[in-house]
Structure formats: C-alpha cells, structure tokens
Amino acid sequence: WKWERLVEKMDDYNGRSEYNPEKHNVIEKIYRYCDEDGKLLYEKVRYKGKGFRIRRPDPNNPEEFIWNLKGVIRLPYLLPKWKDSEKVIICEGEKDADAMNALSFSATSTSFGAKSSWSKDLNPWFKNKIVYICYDVDDNGRTGTKIVAEALMNVAKSVSIITLPSDKEKYDISDYIDEVNGDKTAIERLF
Image (cartoon, rainbow, N blue to C red; front, side, top):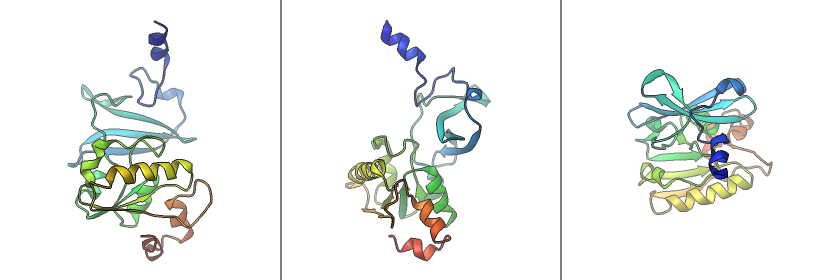
C-alpha cells in the first residue's frame, strides 16, 4: 500500500486530474498540438521559470482542461503546417520550431524534450521525408539527436544532423537565428 500512497501524492509529468495550475507560476506560452486536420488534441503549457505541464481539452466541458494525456495520441508539434512538406527540421523544443517556422522553414518538435525517448508513434509522420535534426548543444541534445536519428533512419528518406556553430552549453537554433539577425541564407548554410 506504500507504493499506492506514493503514486497518489505524485505530481508527475503527465499531470493528474487534481492538478491546480493556480499553484504554479504565470503562464508564459501555450504550445498547441493539433491533429493533421487542425483539431486540438493537447497543449504544453510553459510557465515562467521554464516549468511545463501538459493538458488536454475536457470532452465534457469544452471550456476546461484535464491535466494529463490519458488516451491521447502523441503528435509532432505544428503537424498541420509541415505534414505536406518534403523536408522537415526536428528541433529540441517548441520555441525553436516556432522560430524556424517564422522564417518559413518547416520545423517541428515533440512535447517530450531531449531527455525523453523518442516515441515510435511519431515515426509514420516522417516516412519518406528529408529530415534534419537540430537539437541543443549539450549532453541532452547530443543524446536526443542520436535517439531520433536512429529511430528515423529506416523511416525517413534521409536523416541529417545539423551541427550548430558554437560550443556554448545550451546553445540552440534560436540563439543562432538571433546571432545572424534572422538571415535565411546563413541558416540554410547549416543544412
């Protein structure tokens, strides 16, 4: 019974129905995960201080959310925007995917981050695509890059790893975009 009591007390990554968002920091950003037709399936909520929670619409009360992913299919971020593209860039986080999409690149990420294993449920979305992986410059990013590359090697048309031009820990594609002032030509040279 000790294990059951521990589980009851846990506030794990997938959330719990009794989760109270008012106890957390102010919401900074909401990343919407939609199916290929644009229907919202779940959201990743970013709080000030870089805390994250996952929630899904309550099917019985459209104005409310349930703070878990029970029964929800995991999808790549911004799927409707890039599903028909031949090339797609997989970034470590939504912030980077948003930055690349703002410059008209087809980019995505997952709600799991580099620390998590790649879900094979995502593989079909990358079938026969030219995939570029662009994770952060740190141990988690390097590990995540290898996991994603291995998962997609026999699925995608090709898989390439983008090496960012910095040794600075936590450096990401958004940092590079800032450094080159959004110059698309400079960014394209990375591919």
